[in-house]
Each structure stands twice: as structure tokens, then as C-alpha cells.
Length: 385
Image (cartoon, rainbow, N blue to C red; front, side, top):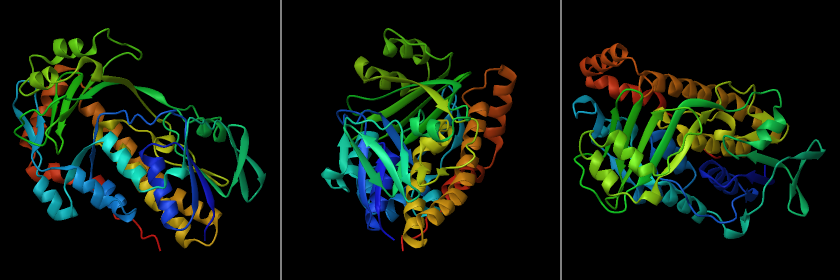
């Protein structure tokens, strides 16, 4: 089965979906509302499930070559003591790949490189779709209307297409946490590949890239909409006395490099990921908190499963039914687990609750950390044919 598709959204999930559709012989147009592809963003960790999805889509090798494996690191307290260590070697042995860290801009470029440039339309926004008949979808685009066999709504947490398709759904809600992040301007010495530090109502995490630069993020309990005149200075006030190399990471960061976003999620699960010949994908379908590092990985899973379903099912309708049946339970389960991880991790503020959590982590066997990652990362994608 082949056909034409319009993918709304040129982020990680949308680009991956377009790659998958083209691999199975579909004609694809990706519509991105940003007028310029500036590749904004900091960094990302990809677990084995995300890397496996990239392998099916044919870009896993290129991503591995540009990424840095995360073999050593773990979770600490602000004074520097360890709560848990991460064993990346064991993860690689059990899953075939370690967790890898890569700048988002690099990942975006690698995904775009797998697509012909003419299939990407920038500076255009799709706010609604319609039907000309049951087998075609109309997509208003600038001064014309595209007719297509399939629409993939990968337009993010604030998806307008999701709001059109499910008007009774409450939409995204504020998670209670805000995140500031950046990539250092220069390489910084680190003893490990990855660290996460939990304080009361705050966490500071950092991952190393292949070129020696470091991505860091700070997640804080905060009312929505709070912004700082000098975000980097605010981070120095909040985290300047935390263990090394945190102060050095802030010192190696340009003030204008700090990004600040409130974290929103789909706390109310969607009743379906499809409506007619429209499929929701990535954050548009299951926006989750970042506490498990699974947001992008789940979008990549979506893309692989959607392509596999369309490659093997006899009709678009049956393929989308299979996509919904396979993706909705898993991604919504991961979203619930991410929310719970945040409540037991960064969002904890009561001293007794923090002390109990820290004690539990310190006495837990090392295998427990591996098992926690395997629970979500040990996923095998379907084949595309």
C-alpha cells in the first residue's frame, strides 16, 4: 500500500514519521510553521528504544556516529554524595546499545538529511484539516489546499489539530515544573557521561557530548510564567553552591544561550490517537514530563510503528487502528510513569520525604537502577515489511 501524506510539524517525531513513510513508498510533504529552521534546543538522551526505532528508519548508524555513549554517571545530592550509579555497560550488554547523548540540533539535521529537501515546506501553518470524501483529507496550506491520503499531526504539545479532532479534551496542563537549559560554549572536564542531582524541589542534570561540550538542565518547582531578567545569574544563585562540575558548567555558558520553558503535559489521556485518516504522533498525542527521558523516544517509536502498520496492513483505516492499539497503551503508560518519577524525584520538597527517598535509593541494589531503565527502554520495533 502506498499513497500521499502530509506531516504537520518538522520536529523529531514529524521528521521521523516522514522518513518512515518514504521508506515504505509514500509521497510525503512535511509542513513546519517556523519560517527558518534554526535548530534551537539543547541536548537529548536517547534510550535503546529510541535508537532501535532510528535503526528501523535507517538513520541509527548516523546518530550513533554523532552521539556520545553514556556509560558512567548516576544520581547525586547537592553536596556531591551518590544516591545511585548508572551502569551503561550492562545496559549495552542487555539492550545492544547504551544510552547516547546528542545535541538536538545535530539530531534534527541528521533526520532532515534523510529526506529530500523539496518535501519540507517551512513558514506555513496548518491549523485545521477537512475531508473531501472518506478516503481523502484536505489540508489548507497558504493559498492552496492539498488533498492527501493521510495526515500525521506531529504539531507538538499545543497541537491545534488535536484540539480540532478532540474538542472535549482539556488539552495540556502545567506540570508544576519549569526547565532552564543550555549547552556550554566550550568543553568542560567531567568524570562521567551523565549526572542528575536532586535537591528539594529542584534538579540539575548534565550530559556530555562527543565534542566535549556539556548540556545542562535545571528543573524547578515554580508557578507558570515566571521568567528572569538574567536567567544564568538566577541559576548561579540557585545552584552555585552545588557540587562540581555544576558551577563550572554555568561559568562555561553564555547568558544568551539559556532556554527557559514551562513543562506542560497531557495529564488526561486521549481517547484515541487517530480520527478518520489523521494520526496524532509525539507530543501531540502523549506529551509527558521529561523525568524518564522518554519523550523523544516515544515519538520515534510512534514513527516506526506507524510506518510498519501502513506497510503491512491492507488499508489506511486498518493501519491506523493498529497504530492506535499498539501505541496508545504503551505511550500513555510511559507518561504516567514519568509523572510519578517527577513527583518522587525533583518535585519532592518535604525534608522527611526527601530523606526517605534518598535512603531508599542508597540501599537499593545496583540492579534496581538497570531494571528501572529496562522497564521502558527494552522495546523492539516492528519491521517495515
